Image 1 (cartoon, helix red, strand yellow):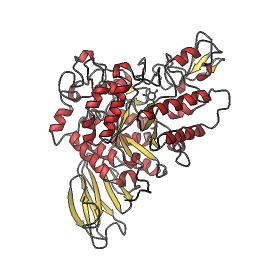
Image 2: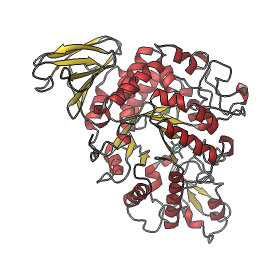
Image 3: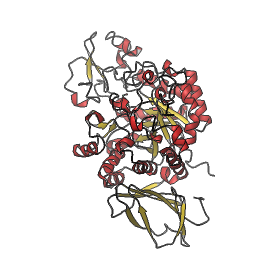
Image 4: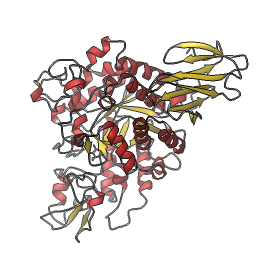
Length: 557
Ligand code: GLC
């Protein structure tokens, strides 16, 4: 095995699992999940095939934005355990072959953070310049707010000093002034602290807002220089740590955050592909997604897209045209209480697809076969639903469903004492839970295990070159991923009718003496000869992953 190549870029084909300690597993019966509880579930995650856990914020917080409002960058919210419990969690995860990354939320702090308490106390307080202030009344910024149901300006007037502070999110989350070198030092110090405790990097919250220097009077320099500096700092401290950034921008602007020399964010969520996938699903027509994938900018081999079906926030459809978004709303979230902020859905996939197991599997087959690194949001692997009665984004942040017991095996506390309401009805713990899914070889969980194993066995997916294959059937997305000597041919049928597609293979796709065609999900093998056309039959919402290889050589599958 060569050691000088780049096979240590672990994030290129990781399987990332996002969880919130608060809602994952409660070990002490107080109704709130904790590190000790989550540590008991690490074997479950390892067995599923997860290679990296992304922890949502676990820091001390008044919880006005579910922990994204932080009062201490160096602590653990006492309800979830101690720093010691966190370290045990990280150590146990590593022992099971999993890395841990965590949210780095440094665009803002909570307004209860001691820095802000100081900063707002007087105009000449030494912490004043940790935040962004203006003395003249702000213009109308109502179109720029992120949470239009709660805010109508990105500036709020602070009574004591009569000046306005910047907050891109809620008014209780004042934006840090990242042009201040002392703030930059503080951010780096916090990162260094968590790296020392064993984290393998960060999911960087709200990157464009964090780097933005709008409203800051003095010259702050190029924000990309700052991001490069942070990346250099990270790599100096922990060579293989990553920055996985939340950058929901059109591709042209988004790619800049990878850096020209792949020296900024290692990975970025692919919000654009995610949204077009839903449009294609709604239409039963793969072309919207295909067009987007064709336009997806190529990136440096060291960088990576993170693909996902949904995350912990609203399922945002903000990059679709109004009419397209309406199509997705009509198909998957027609009721007003299913929508949020006028741009997104509060729902998880299985209820949106009416629980259709074949269609749900098709979407996850797609997730694991699109080029990139897949990111799962806890509970997706068993097909959890949402609780629409919960406010806004909290609808999908319900307790993990381990068993069919009253509190879902999440906690021994009664349901009305849990930190978040459970899902009710068809997608609640009575019907959907880990224990039942583990016993059932035909469950979504079992299928997810197969997908994860195949994904990890197919370096073509994380590492390879992606290209679309032309098919005359608009319902079918056909693509191939090539890496070193191997090629995968992958097909997804977005329609409710069966489809058949024929693919003319290139010279060299089939070995001159004939090849073996393996169906990686069905585990069947047939022979294929050069010059033969590859004909693929797909049932309604069908999917197939095929590999052609030299008989007797290379991989056994
Ligand atoms: C990001 C997070 C979101 C949070 C916001 C403010 O968008 O994903 O959950 O509310 O930042 O921190």
